[in-house]
Length: 183
Image 1 (tube, one colour):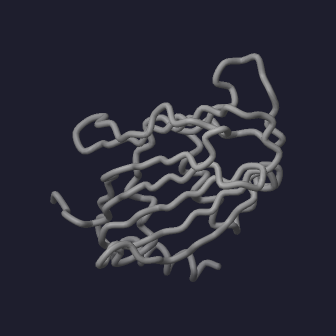
Image 2 (tube, rainbow, N blue to C red):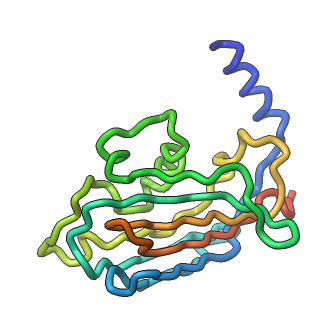
């Protein structure tokens, strides 16, 4: 175990500076009776800081099952599958978080910026926007990608939200990693 930690630390130090930035975000509602997009945009928060903002208004409750299919695509001549394509049962994950699941690291990165924090079923509530999905000012942290040595290029995270057995929404988040290092 100690050797793995030392090796991992060496790889991070040798890999050099990782520079990441959001370049675009697109949201599409596939089931218009389920939800609508209120906000889907990038916002400049400061010098070199770009935050992603998404507000999906939920129109039809209850939601009994939620699955998230997420994949990484790399831009070569068009976008091509890269690294992984995984589907996670969000309802199960929220009850039983598992650090050995890849989704754990994505969810942990989003947690300070997103309001999705409860299990299923999602029922009717009198509180306004209580069940809407809101991601506010999510900034990519360069450390998120430090374990991947030599990672460089333009990438797309494709996220599909599957609610009650049907495709509800698709989110495409575009980012650059080490494309132009300002140092």
